[in-house]
Length: 111
Image (cartoon, rainbow, N blue to C red; front, top):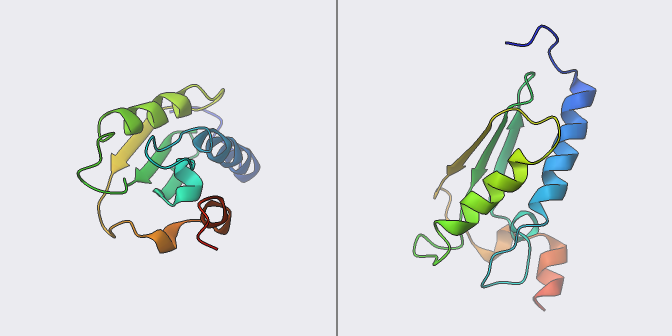
C-alpha cells in the first residue's frame, strides 16, 4: 500500500484518462467505441490508482468475447499512473440499444 493515497482530484483526472482510452477501443462489428456504445457499466478507481471496470459485450455469443476485453485491459494498463487493472465481464443487465450514448445513436443513424 502506497504511503500517499491519491486525492479525489487525481482520481478524477485518472478517470478522464480511462474514459479517453476506452473511446479508442471499438467493437469490431459496430463502428462505435465501447464507452459510447454503452458496454462499460462501471469504472471504479481506488486511492492506490487501481482501476476496476465492469464491461459487457453486445451478446454472450460475440465473436470478440476474448479479444475485445483483453484489448480494453491492455489499453487501460498503458495509462501512465494506473496501478492494477481488473476488468470484469458482466452480462446483467443485458446490453440493449438504449444504453448507447446519443453520439453513438447519431453515428449509427438511430436518431
